[in-house]
Length: 162
Image 1 (cartoon, helix red, strand yellow):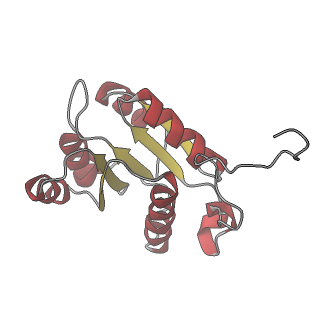
Image 2 (cartoon, one colour):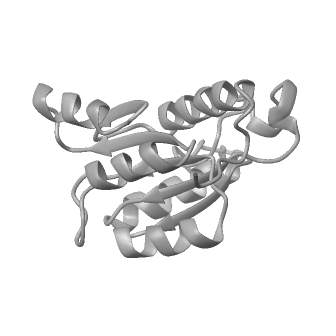
Image 3 (cartoon, one colour):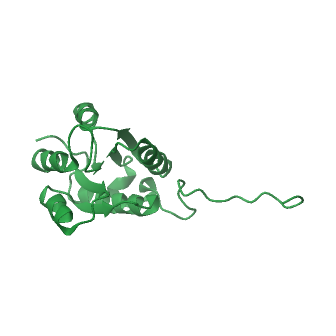
């Protein structure tokens, strides 16, 4: 409106004032940012999560397929992987099973599959958390912060391939 001061409208892709970033969390989380890889073929969703989580203090990489995930995994040390189930070249269940068997990474599945059988298969593949889309960025961030804190509390820190 004319004559009205501009108001700041918070973006759903920016952390809210008062949100605690992982860097401000007590304990080992202060040592370095949580390193997260997002494996999602929907570029808009992937880029939005990368931006939001990065703005909250995490070190985030986004990839669109399994091949790019495995390439990134070979060269980067991640703490947590957020996986879509339906990918162009593999599925998130296979990646979760691989990670569960060979690494100490936290595993979060984020998918449109809401059936009980899908959730059971996801947890059976090694997922720590299972989210059905749409997922609010703030909810995902808080889940990642909590999972990272628990993983670091067990002495895992930077997960290494076994």
